[in-house]
Image (cartoon, rainbow, N blue to C red; front, side):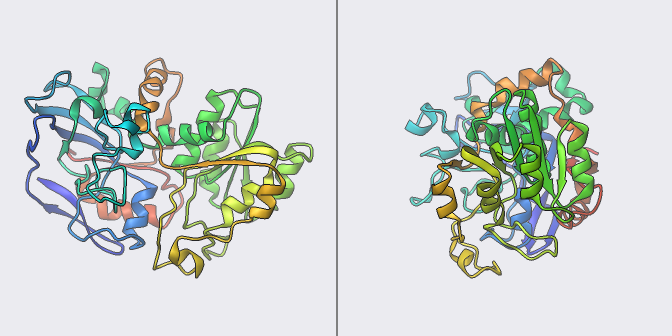
Length: 383
């Protein structure tokens, strides 16, 4: 089959690789019809992880089941399914509590919990930027979609259930967003957009989105958010102005460890410290941007060891609460699916480009450079 293979920093190639096969009675094989490039893929693409060369990328995947193992009971060949980026067993202690991002069985590394498709440090599983994908624990991990998921236009919405829509929702859950709250969101990339959409669905009274990229801020404004261009004004002053000098009730971090200033200089602590500054006393903060245990390639001395110069004094003095971590997609994806089915949410508004799989190197290059207009790239292996 054809697949997108990581070959080293800023180099991916579409290659012929062996077809996946059923390896366990609970496996499912899926013919991929839509797969996304995620901002998290860029950490690997940039060479900022320990991703092995030769691995297949891609953890935002949707397609048609073509074969199910003998131990699969509910999922059938012909079903259209969306796959959470988390690979989870469904019955370990963490999965039983809904913590599917922290499954105790799917990562063979004794020092790690949780697994994902085509992701550094998240187990040996190949990604879905390919014609086919093996899905472990198929009954648990496959979200069966309505019949209209065969329509490519509808797939643009449904595929967002694999990661960014639930992750944006997770940011607002971690931040405890309630109706009537004011919310400040750092990052207007796909996850930040989904956090803004989620806050809108939750009837937040005011949603402020901070970024440097005008096209992404314009996109956020289209769903009613207040865009704040950090290259043109003081974010702290603007947030205080918008909140009558109090600060936002809730804050969401949707950037991660490669946060940078307007000049492009990286500051991994920048967004979390900005949240401490702009969220009110006793406010709450949700962090879903990726932070890794070590980043030897970081220009920041502390972050080479996974540490940041966090404003703990300000955080403590303001009595704020912060929650972090990967999204437990299974905890949200069925409810969010219902919102899409009933046309209460159309997350596909973030999609800027649809490409055939063989143009993946081009998609990665433009998306990685944050070129104007490249907000979300989806690919179709059958184009």
